[in-house]
Image (cartoon, rainbow, N blue to C red):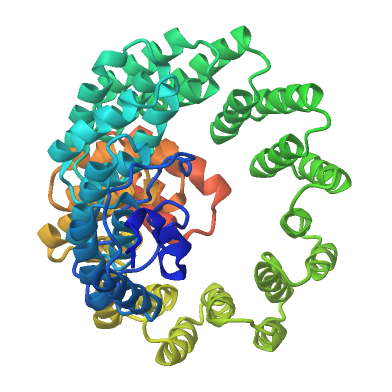
Length: 592
């Protein structure tokens, strides 16, 4: 009897799994408890290949078939400790690219990273012309911080992408963006892009890597080079504005205004220009940009919605309501989101009955829980806290996530009513039922601070960090609390530095870093972080910290100017009020 060769294996049901869609390692699957490897970043791979890979002349023996059945059944039953070694052994034995591909997929899903790298190597050796195999092994090496080993594969990835070299650079840039060693990534990207100096995407990829590595001048130079190669490229223009904004908002505004003179139909650039004008409180000029956008794109519901949101941010509630209503008439893709904003606009105008009507129009779906929370918030503003809590308690939740959101909303109502102990107790009871729920751990920790339970705050946040090591705000909250209490400042700074690595553009984390540096007596360093944070987000608490450090540095007029500006918009902020009293009244006894 003739034994069939492995090339015919696709005819058998067990090999069907091996011939499935090419491997695309999942971006969000959590590793099993037995795995020690950290979850890799999102992977960008090519579309499934429409080509027949070279197949070996391997015979399908009974032993091979048995191993394959064993491996596949184990994989289907969720037994990776059996499936991964069995498939890896098959890949070594058969050198069949389809088997190696399947072995890579199963090892990746189980987070057996070393096995996945070996299987991907076999896959590439068996089919050296496969761009997908090349991309997968490069991705695995990058995720394991093996950048030097990944570079040759990345080079071949780009070389094989002709004539689509540009998109390949954008894919690789996305892959490298989450890598922790930003300096090494910048150096790698510069080496990778060197032969492609005439490709705008390559120059932009270098600019983005340099930006992440805090190499601002290189980032700006490369962004300008990308625009020189493709002057009407809005993505590059927006990135250049982002780089300039780190230096000053005025530079970014001037650049965007000049760009729009040359390319007036650049929708995204004009939207961002208008957004920055709103942030700078230049509302008159922002309104002009709204008018241009609406005139240029009268039938674009996305533009109408964006203008409505910007008008709302600028406190131009008449214009915001008009544009939200237009978005509804234009059948905007998420009508419940529009209704939610219409409720908020009326809430801001203290038209509480009208706001309640809009929130009531929102049915089950993505916006439903938010609408119920806002509805309860309006009741509380009307002095009906008991009714507000009762409303939230009667809302039907479909899952634990919604139950937690409703609990958070009720706790927020209690905090706003200064019922801090009640909020702490409410969140504590919810945490007893869901002890590992990240949102509850965080909110209970924040409530603990209000009732002086630093022990609970610290234990919750440390548990949260253990569960979610990428939770930037857990590190930040713990570090900031230590800094604010003027305790364990070195540890506080380390925690905040970790948070800043995870979220480098978060103004609140920048504020925490500035504050801990100030507490350590490093005023000038702290001032730099606080000024950047305030430029991004003129929040009252950031203003309080910035003003205090300016005051300590002898810049009292500037401190008072910032405090005065922010107090106009946030007159009831407790921290800002207390800070102003401490310094101004202390320096002027007659003002007491």
